[in-house]
Picture 1 (cartoon, rainbow, N blue to C red):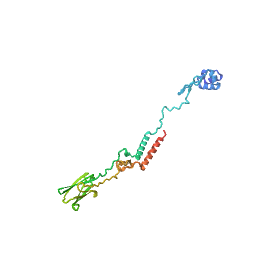
Picture 2: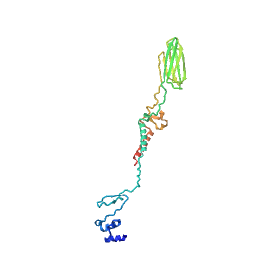
Picture 3: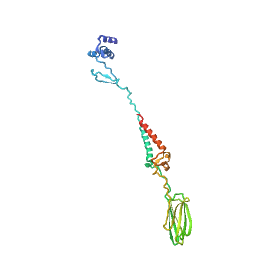
Picture 4: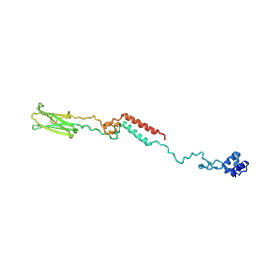
Length: 280
């Protein structure tokens, strides 16, 4: 049946109900002319238009299938778009650098990482002597310990008898230290007690220790330099001296910070904050 014949049959009521059910356009026109109730009384059901995406639900009118194409989201081709993520690795690195700089200022890296090496200062210098008399022979022995290698040392002495009234000898000896310990012994013929002696130890021409007296009567003066910096008291690494980290001069006292420390703290703090606030 042609479209014009079906339209004519719809208007005069001679069309077969099955023709209306099979044509959505014809059903829509008949619904506007006669109304849905009249069509239902005639046994005409609304035609079902199949969709690729649809569900069958009951609408109270005989379980007619209703398409849900209008309610479905637009197909994205089955590919899930990856959401941007925060750079977790960069955040961890920034936090690690921040903690290193902060701990270096607070307690010092050198407190838990032994990078610094103490300077080897001069060893404690000791100077002692002993004297004995045997059958008119005065024997004096000097002992020097803690010498610096390749440094120049000398001992000068004055030997006297008769209560220091008569001088027996004035002399001395010098040497370049090839080891840290030296024992030197000299002897003189004496005849009138008491016997006395005075001796002076010099380092590079400067008197650093002396001893005088008789047997067992020893006075010692030693030079110790306690003002040298050490790694235990200087645990904060100076970033400007990082290439020379093993040198004591590359370290300072903890609890304080310099310009570089402040700049690094601000840099890593801002970088960490920016990365953590970055939108996903």
